[in-house]
Image (cartoon, rainbow, N blue to C red; front, top):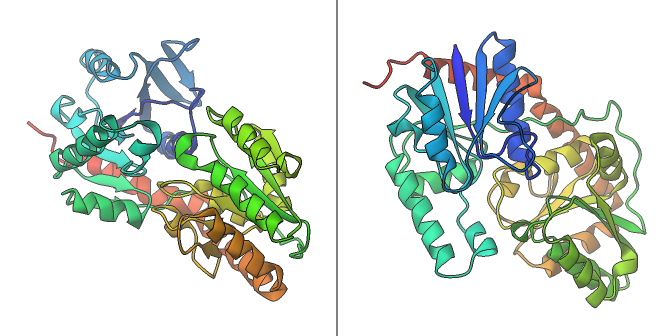
Length: 368
């Protein structure tokens, strides 16, 4: 069968992130089943118009506001596809109205408050309204999403047919859980694209609070992005630059080493589709402290594999970290639970039900 993924970023896009990593894993699984797989994405400087990437035919054209039209023009020249996967990142591709074949919608998170992180009013309000309207328009299209949190929001927006498949992770859980005592200096790590919606500044503020409470603590920030300079400035203004390491973009081995070394992953995002880095940390024997937001409440089981804070404040992160310093037995329990749970998200356990569902969607009677 022939499958087409529509997603504005492809794996080689400089802005590619967790969404592209999990998308790639699912598409590679379809190739292993003998299917043809195509990925249409936005163009970016230096990119080839077409290339083969790990067996996937990637086509690029257009940018924000134009790639939907470019995709439609390209699509008209292609042989019939069995299924088009319309991946939403705030704005969809409207494929069910022009693809003339079976379509499903794929969405990691409903942006909602994330619009406020990037745009001021009234653009942010218009973005949120557009998103709700789009979901209502797609109300009868089958949706695929990684978390129950996203499912609940989609239902409120009028979507009726929603299938939840938790994401897998590329991180192989440690074969043996290494000893790691909860002790000072307390080592915290964030692994994230440095963007406004990730609120990495909250992790720096939590560090400041911990230091004011006389805790010996260090923070490592893994990742790069538009807010890196501002975050370094924040660390300087708070007087904690000597306690914060900006590690930059690391390869998988280096990233896993940071996760293995840390006592906690700290994730203070506005909202996530799932929280892939939480499971990656768990695989390295590291629990997480996360905000009580969509996606993160799905990837972290409160008081079992980590802590979901009571509110979205740096003070709440600091409180969770302080409480565990005096509870070494509890910390070890969190580590073991997190490590064991991470094993259930291995790709070989996750991809099969998704591919089965996609194949079933592809063989339905096509729209007239």
